[in-house]
Amino acid sequence: MASEPTIQSNAPAAPSGGLGSAPALFEWVEQTRQTASIASAVALATSHLESGRRAEAESVCLKILEHDPAQADALHISGVLAHLAGKNGFALALLEKAARSAPLAPQIQYNWGVVLAATGAIESAAQRYRMALALSPGHSNALRNLGNFAFEAGHYREAVRCFEGALVEREGHAHLHLSLALALCALREIERARSPFERALALAPDDARILWEAAQYFLLLGDFPRGWDLYEARFAAGDDCRVWQYAYPYPPWQGESLRGRHLLVHGEQGLGDEIMFFSILPELLEQGARITLVGQPQLTRLWSDVFPGCSVRVQPRVGNARWTHEAPPWLAELNADPPHFQIPLASLGRLTRRTQDDFARQKPYILPDPQRRIDWLLWLRQRPADPRDALPPGSTAAVPLWEVSAQPKKLRVGLVWAGASGLDHPAARRKDAQRSLALEQFRPLFANRSVQWISLQVGPAAAQIGLGEAALPILDCAERLVDFKETAALVANLDLVIAVDTAVAHLAGAIGKPVWILLPFAAEWRWGLDAKSTLWWPSAVLFRQPRPGDWVSVIRAVEGALAGLCPA
Image (cartoon, rainbow, N blue to C red; front, side):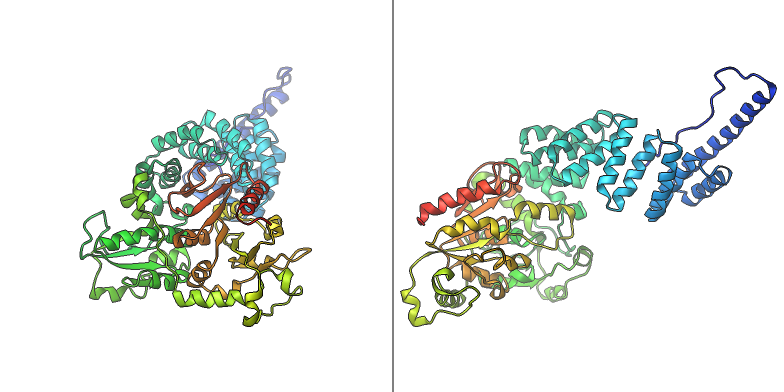
């Protein structure tokens, strides 16, 4: 909703043929007097609205509408007020009536579109914005909102045109420059995005959202000093960056000596982020630190194995408000040995990974539990190397141990084809859709009979196994993969992992297992621009989309690489 609604006057003009008789003159004077009175009332209502005096604005509009029920400006302001009060159905009725009374008023069309968008009627809202543009070419708010719609729909070239058009009139609007930069990044026009990023930073140097997005841009470029420093703004950006932080009552660690010191390291982002950044922890332990680490429940059993000398605590993510404002139940237990310092997990990057040379210290650090690894090996050996060779469709029977040796030796390949589901943030849902595939899209790979396929997929996407015209030959392990300790033990028994950009890809890299990571066209900053390798995991090979949405080319490249390992 525009903060300054445009209220257009509808005062009658003098008759073009002259005033003529005295009665005509009197009628025109009376109309002008009434119109001037209404215009004054509209100006008063507008002033009340802009000053936040909604009740007073509504009262003035009601009086105007008592005199003239079709008065466009009063209907318009009343519609704005209804929208601000959350009464969008009533607001739509008022704005539609206002548009009938003043069909050439662009701001009415624009605000009508804003309310339609608030109800989820995106295409209808876009029509109103386009009408506002037809009536007022260059209407910056309409262009910006159309650009936002195009961005959300993945029409990034159109988004760029809209944002550039809006900037003609609003060059000093920092978030418009940011929107343009993000759209250019989505098109992988990385150098062209630098200028709007720099302009946004210059216009709003303290804006946390701009700092957060710019941080990812510079990290993508490999400008680690600038990127990590800007990355510290992530907590102030709130839901825009989807990180969590409780205000632990200990001083922040800024690189001081850790010899004999107690450091609290607390997770803040997703499961993959925890696995990636906890790779730095062995260096801190080598410095003599005593560490309490805080992670998500799915990882804490694994962390207890990997870091036996650390105290491992659980902090489930049960909503941003609770995570950031409620003290964890174990916090009081630290009073016996309070930490000297605390640090959010990703801030370790700023202190330890400021140059490419610093990544030379990056190495596998997860050694899966030996007993669970043996248990998984025995379980795998009792499964057919290829269901098409041994079992009828739908059978889940295990192969007797005395028949295991008779099975042909095949390359064991783990597969993850989709990310998380049920995400409640629009940007997170969009990114998940971009990184995820359907299992059916991997069908060309299953033609290689020299591979035993092991599903590492959990969550709703695991149900895709067995669907489709012909079930794909992949072993479903979802029920046994209760946490990452189990997943790590299974991965340790595989020859290769093929995964989209998920936590399992990071897990395989952290184990040192060969992992092929399938990336969307505009991949996240951690994977760099164009390289086939990553600084984070030496055992990883990156397969990138050559154009947005083109998974066919990626699967074809993986098929060729797989054939090089084990001809079909």
